[in-house]
Image 1 (spheres, rainbow, N blue to C red):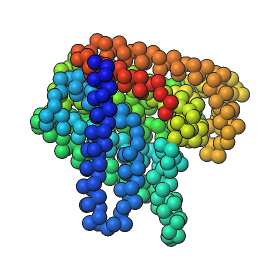
Image 2 (image 1 turned 30 degrees about the vertical axis):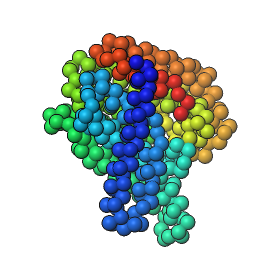
Image 3 (image 1 turned 90 degrees about the horizontal axis):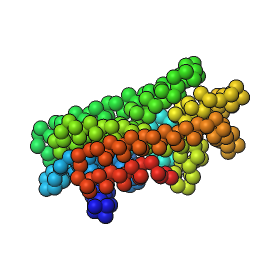
Image 4 (image 1 turned 180 degrees about the vertical axis):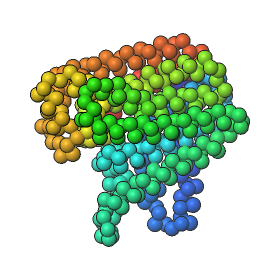
Length: 364
């Protein structure tokens, strides 16, 4: 069962890439009708779509398979739905990099940096930075619109497609709400203080990452297969717990990860001032000196290696890193228990167990 699960997951990744390549090729023809000079927008999208772990398509596919989804036209449909998730992910990343003013994404210049460099190289008039931001926003808007178009093309019966549509739309709306909460927390955390900061950070995790990374892709696959309420409930418990563990691991890597593996500069989350669960736990347990150091250095865009090391020391000394690792372990246990109790076939169960490892025991 495990070998079948692994080979199917590998096939799925390649099949989703093919779906995306065909669709983006169609859009290239439409954009060329506007003007060949729109090419850099498509190049930015293609660069982003060419990378990634394809976790969301994998959860969607195996959520569908576990709920009894079959092949044929329905098999083609779940590939389209999975590809739509990747386009939505691309939109979220393009906009996220603008909001965070990130320099890189997956080891390459972020889209807004690419557009700004194009502007400077051509010595055009106006601000290169504003041109870059506008280009990245438009590329993200295209991906958001395209995600809807690809999903709508999925060849499922109307009733199933409508059930999936409700999950898909909920996912997109709640992610935007989670993104706003994340912005709000970074802007208002100093005035709100440490009280309730951990719970606020975990709420951001739930709606900015956990639901749209794992729970909603699973529920989308389930809805498109006509899953019953019991399986939907099992998937929800599994997906929320694993989704939180996934984001907590991401937060740890954002501070302690190897840049050559993560594709982002060391300590980038600290420069961006992200009020993660890791940071909230540290502030909660910090003494006056440590709290003052965090307040002074966190969010400094010019934070150097020494500053990153000083903040890392606080995160370790306060026990915040250990507590986050404990949270990850606990949430993985909750997810695995829910999966064991779910009424899915052995191959889907094996594949989802593999995805637990891929989501949490990773270095990038």
